[in-house]
Image (cartoon, rainbow, N blue to C red; front, top):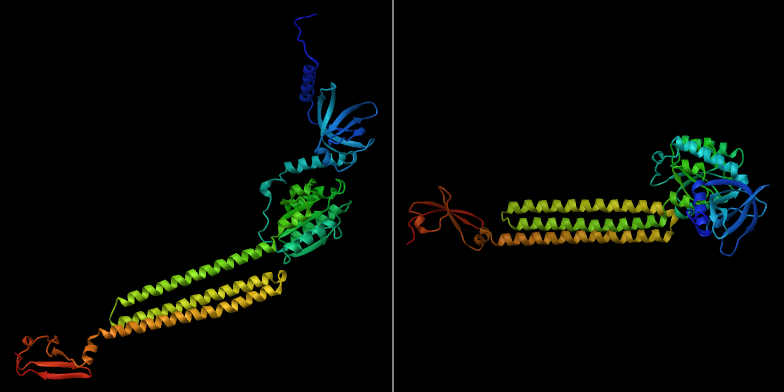
Length: 446
């Protein structure tokens, strides 16, 4: 016995063999017939892949076994994808699969992958060439079968979420030899019309052969060249077509596509209510600022005593009041216009009684605002009259009215406050309540 040779256990030998198998063989495709199909309670699947001369054991583990679109049966020809490995417990090599489909789809799958690689190399699927969807879709073109489940799902979701959307159904075949050409023609016509904000291509699920019209090269190029954003919702969530890759947005199902295209009218109503509350808050803030400006104007008015200045400030205060009223009226009318617009937008989707309630609320708010402005103007007028009475109380003319006279010299008009300021023969003027008396000094008082 050669003691220099390495001694291995069966487990070590199996590990070496497994590593050699997994390292030497990449991901491979095998077309074969199924045999000895078993599916225990664990959910895994075990079977053989065989041809006329040999066979190999294979396994498809859960959850990938649950994604199959067909029920595997003995004798069925399949196209399987997986890696070679070694099952160490028995020392047998096997394939562990990650995908399996009926062999009838094998040729289609290869053609799909080849065309996808070629169009991808041309940049038709590049993210930077995809157009964003408009924030608000007004007109939508739906290209699909008029009798399929997909169109019913789309129209039902659109009617529930946003009934004001204009939807044009462009009926077309969605499978068969002439389907691709018909869909391409409708797509190009809808794009050239300039009528639509978005074009939706959709159909229900099916086999790869059923969906093959949406893998057409001319249709894929027409989607990529469209100036109108295109949304693709073909088949189920696990189905992918070349139309999905070329479209500006791929939706997993027709219903999801409808939800992505339009907002929920309930969200819009909530937003309108929030904007209405914000508008009312801004209006109250603006009115409060205007009232503060009026108060500051009154304070400046109180600090100045001449009658002319008082009248000037009074006119300014009146002008401020008029501008305040005009500004409030403008804001009020703007709010009325917004409410009317919101009512028109939501009228088709909301009960009439809610609109009536909004109108009654608006009618209650308008007299209340007019009454508040009237009371404010009355308070300002009373305040101005009180100020005028205060000014008159400290005026020198009020003193004259009580029987006193104001003496001034005739020559220079200076005020005479003492007998020492005059001499005999000086001429004075005595101002009384209702006129002026000329006075001549005979002899100063002693």
